[in-house]
Length: 97
Image (cartoon, rainbow, N blue to C red; front, side, top):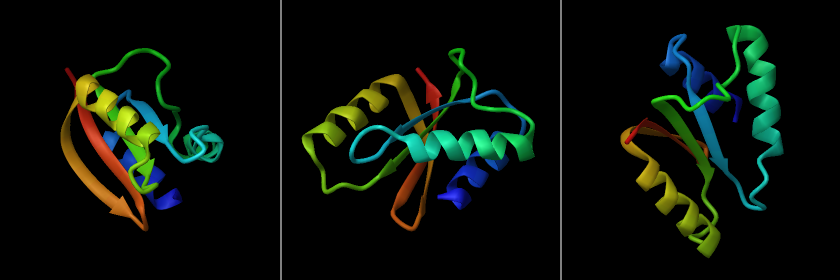
């Protein structure tokens, strides 16, 4: 998980970004914590304002209804530019539509 967070920060390269995370049971406390913790090393947190740069992170959960709805919403929010996988955690860089 930490490798995925590092990838996001390195890929953002100092640019402001938003992050949206899907994990089964839906509430991403662990990732909220990891982004706050890594912000100490990188000097900033994901933006609270709407940014063009958006990262979506998700753990595969077998295609549940909740996941399908969430990923469908992401597809309507931003155009997929790059995707990478870290041990079952998918990280996508998107550009807001």
